Length: 340
Image (cartoon, rainbow, N blue to C red; front, side, top):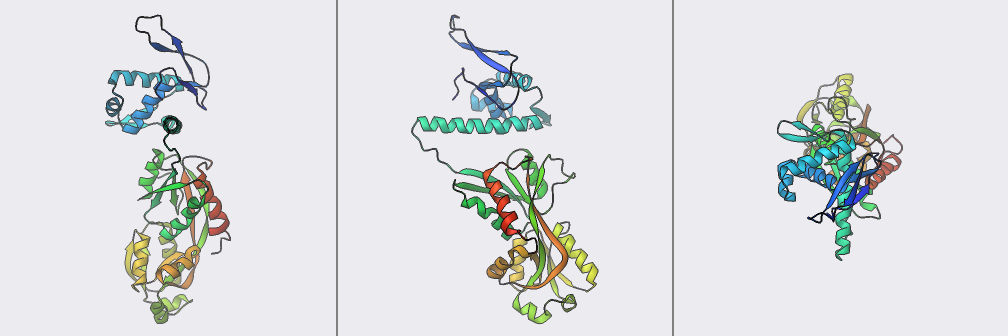
């Protein structure tokens, strides 16, 4: 895998590094010379860049590769000349990948992963490991929706290993930009507030209902907003898309309610609702799941309230097979009619 004479083609129009036999020299080594050409890049330069990106610093990469710092620094400069731009920017003491660096790293990661699989195959080791899908899940996103979105990924012919990360949308988008995630699910598109180059792929939308236990429905009635006067409510955190819809609805119907609690975690909110602590808003697309899992029943549909869902990636076109399957099933089945 680390043979010094290996060079290969990348889908970028860049530079040719070709190896010239220097065997007549006393050290009997091969030396790579660079010449302007097209579609070739030096394997070693890319390996050093990939290792620095993975380890987080040149110093750590030196320890990993057992090389001196000037050697790696020099090879990185050569690679930058080859690809025609900066691969890193220094932010404080850290090296941060530029947009060009992120693109090169993505290809390098695939190349060296396949290279390791080739090495394993030649040594007789099994290589059929599952494809990984790194998913970012905002804390405020309904977990039943997330589960339904991810189900198609587990039904693909090729095994998929899910690796789910939870956090704020800002944190997850930062991880996405660093290529630590393949996709971030969200109920709102990535906006200009977060300086991340990302693309919003709509998965669909559905209506929103108000749910409660049978005891609450018996006490406060069903279907009419007036029956909810002074009713206990459990609400998602302020600033979320769902909370804005609820606040607008409550403003329009002009009835007093009691807010028992506000939650970042919608799963925890539903646990409280299951105990009878209050009514809870939730997407109608998972109404049946809510009834079966939490024994909560619809009190009413909230007029004009819509939940929209997105798959956010760094690619304009979805490429990961699992994300493609998720998008197709979401549009055709989960949010198919747009009325649920």
